[in-house]
Image (cartoon, rainbow, N blue to C red; front, top):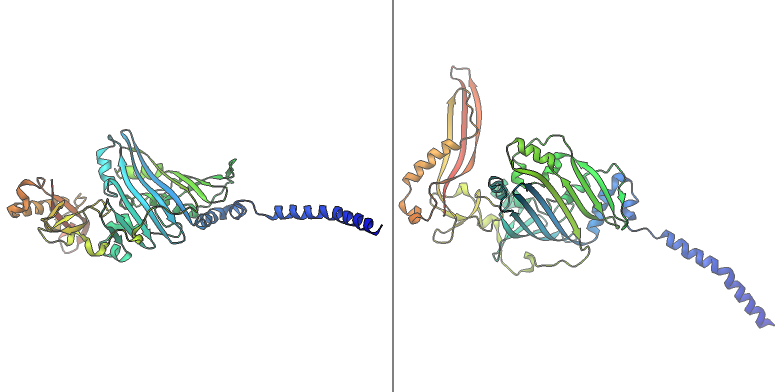
Length: 413
């Protein structure tokens, strides 16, 4: 009988405890945070910053960033495709400019000044940016090299690792600077879509550095931005219609045949191993841009140089080479413009005065500089000038001053 009582007592105890155990398990399930709760559980105004933190918390990610210039003759596309390691502050990217056959030639030439056409490899590691074309050595732009070579290198330096991501210059940089005002739309997969606006001067930071410098007043018309966060609260995609930015460029008579300007950014492969080998892998030599490049305005007359592999798409900063080696240009002369003209003159710059000096230098150049016709006819010009006005009380009256420094060079045909 004692045994039976014990058995009944045990069974009764189990029956009494079972609901309690189930209830405890139910509480544990309820206490478990929902995916993305660290982002979506915050006030709306804090969610984009939290999303940026969540994205970095993934450790690594693949991404594609594009800037599309739409024209009737086809599109031109700046694209960066690669991977980022948030913990190490590094990225490895393929960067390039491609254009349709009938994209307006004048507009394409302007875009080429900001990025070489074709593909190149770009890597970032903290404040340093590395560039490589084809099988060449990595060219490292340190902050010191950028300061020494001048603002032209800003096209490359703009990609250095920032607070948001190891590869800068994308829509990811804008997201934490925007405060959403309206509740996002929730999709079936748990992701959220936000529709916000951003100031045009902030959106203009997506443009290549050379284009940014051509306009200083971006107006007040807001840019429409769409941001999608995944179910975990990480940045998954962003798109922007840069029409207001393009309109201001049109007012400066820039990209006049471009009718649409759009930016996009997509992230994927969160937490997966980064593919490819960057400069730290040691597979290829690394050169210091500050030691192998030079501003063209510092080269002596007759010096030869190339723009290949600089990643800049400009002749303002070049790699000096021996004239017996493959090169693209030869310095003809360094000229200065310093003119004072009577009265108020309608002059935009000193280019015409510099050209007169270049013509004189071309006429006086040694015959062997022309290399038997291997250079294109005539000369090219790079440099800048400033135009000002002054008024003297001593009787000279108003004057227009034009000053500047230019390099005249021959381009190899």
